[in-house]
Image (cartoon, rainbow, N blue to C red; front, side, top):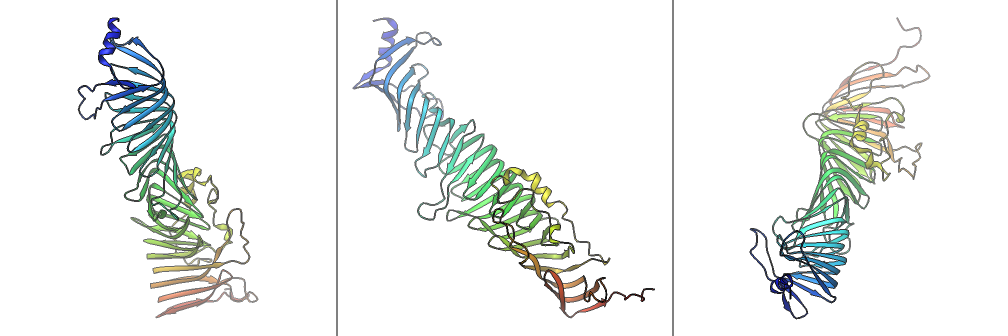
Length: 468
């Protein structure tokens, strides 16, 4: 027997059906374990070219390596004895108490208890079925608080619904440059993150997901899109209830747009029913601005209420004002990309911010053509416009004209309307002050004006020959 073969025989203790490598002193923080190698095919031993006196073993398979709770199998293996490194090649299967993994190749670094898998990798968390799929995945075999499983080279992460069983909701699919599992219930992603969950789609530069907190947070140029809405901000937090996204909160110069509405504020919060928006609140430092159906609103905060994803009413609260655009309904710009399009999120936050451009504080002037209402609170209700036919391909249509405007508290209004077109095409002007003011519309045009504790001025246009 040669000296090198004798060294291998001393280092690898033969056991029934396999080879045993005794554990040596472990680096601090590494949970070392005895390594067993079982093989069905021949073994060839060669000197290790990188370490004098050491052996590299080439083992035909199938080969099984076990270390503690981990079992690794493959068509063949290469074992570097001094480094305690095993390379599994072909049809690799790995399993321990927390995960399973399939790949083309797998390297186990015994000295640091690390696994690196490459080539068509598919890792599954046993506890909840969450998956990582991609070209490369690495992790530490022994789980510990904060331990990380890292996938690189544009992997796909699949997160299950936050509860099991019927009605649990769809899975969350995340594509990114890097994806990680952190511990047993947290995950994160970075680099051109694209998230889809049913009809909900989102993009950002970074994202974190917590099964324990039932929350996902998107960071840096975050955009989230659902049925009939787009929401953007520097960051967005999405909260889950019973396996469904129920709330979305956008921070830092947030914008929202959808079917015939736009919104700009420091923060915007939305409540969802299914994948459709049910309520939207805009608030924060500075003023909140909105436009919908020929109406521009401003207030310290703004609240939209929706029915079937279409704006039904909007309230501006705190030094509130609403100004009517007396032009056609076509004056309200549409979102830059149809919100029903799967590609809408790819427009990015710059396009959504552009959709909010032009939202300015109502002027509340008294020049000809001005029409506005103001108060502590202003609320507008909308109704379907029978002259507008919805497009099934884009889900446009729905509530598309003003039905009523109401101001509460320190209310005032100035509206221009043509009362008698046979007498004059110039508008009459109504200026009113009161505790409350209400304007009712017919066909999208103001018809009746009423108020409480109100005083006002009504001016008719001069007839021909009466102008001085």
